[in-house]
Image (tube, rainbow, N blue to C red):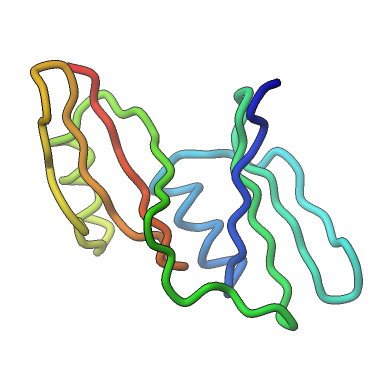
Length: 120
């Protein structure tokens, strides 16, 4: 069995796409409608993708606790600088629980914790 995607229900597709394209660096793989009000977008070129679903008749979760999605970066310090330049705030961190990894978290436009990880 392999993990293929993580689905996030979003309030605003364009705002969410901007975050995942500009901040995370994911490209759109597929974009389509799935009914009169529902739009789906799959992002990422790798084996595991992020799926965004926008459906105005379905409420997006207000608070997403206990789940995060992580992305590897070359430098935590450079990514923090980039996040701040884009007008976003670091939600928590940076942390270095051992000598081999550093990471920090930001919230996406839907309140999902996004972790940026540097393998030291």
